[in-house]
Amino acid sequence: MDTSIYVLAFVIFLALAFDFINGFHDTANAIATSVSTRALKPRTAIMLAASMNFIGALMFTGVAKKIGGSITDPTLLDNGIDIVTATLIAAIIWNLVTWWLGIPSSSSHALIGALAGAVYVGAGTEHIKWNGFIEIVEGLVFSPLIAFVIGYIVMTILKWIFAKRSPHTVNKGFRSMQIITAALQSFTHGTNDAQKAMGIITFALVTSGRLDTMEVPLWVKIAAATSMALGTSIGGWKIIKTMGTKIFKIEPINGFAADISAASVIFTATLLHLPVSTTHAITSSILGVGSAKRFSAVKWGVAGRIVVTWFITIPISAVLAGVIFKLFF
Image 1 (cartoon, rainbow, N blue to C red):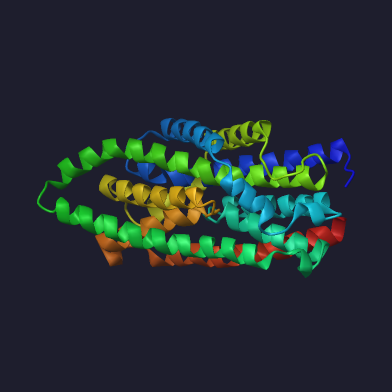
Image 2 (image 1 turned 60 degrees about the horizontal axis):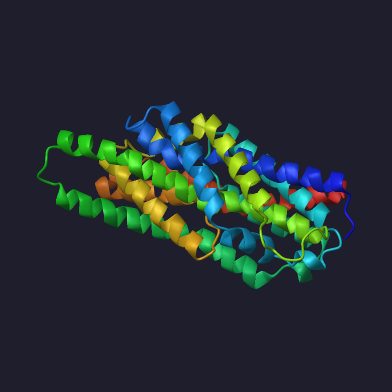
């Protein structure tokens, strides 16, 4: 497809804008627990998250290739640029709406749903690779369940190990360790989430004829990593408040358990080239840790509102992208 360089530049701008919004939308994933327990000051936590996001984003590309080639084949689309544009606009709108409402929804769900919806309307159901789409959705669905279980187990083990220690002493030690887990969580966030924008940009380059394969160029890696890091540096305070205080009262030992559980799930997914929701992973691990601490301590009403958002994001993003494609392309 012969695509104007200006049109392609606009699509790349949209992808980097999505990545930037993803950065401040999902900052809470990495630092909500460490901020709420005062292990880190907010500004310090955000700078740490931005730095580690940048490093993580540069180190892997498997998820980018999965995003860009598993839902549809960009080389077979005559209107691939239009499809990508509708996808990004829909995903950005949903991210901004949920950020404004302070709901930790999934940027990954929004992007996957929007891409599937735009392909369905713009090219037809025959251009959707249903096996690849289902595989990605399965990863998005099962990862939070796994994170919940791991969080519950890790917290149960820590409770057993430190049962006879003074809570003050235990929390003092874990408050320091939370600095490490916040950095780890930010790093894993970069290894998975930043690659989604890389995948979409590479998708656009392939469908426009600028690239022959889904190999991610170095400049795309640097641009996506920088964009996410800048977004992260702004911080999403509404979501940080929800994640860090509204689910249950988090103490340093709980924050450590939640961060290490979520980071292990996200990084394992990155190694398997599976895009997962970092939002869902950390939220589910917090729920698992809270349940292990005391089931009644979890504010299940807030948790229920978050879970509802998980379920509706993919279909709403798909419909939104389809409507945008119909209206403008």
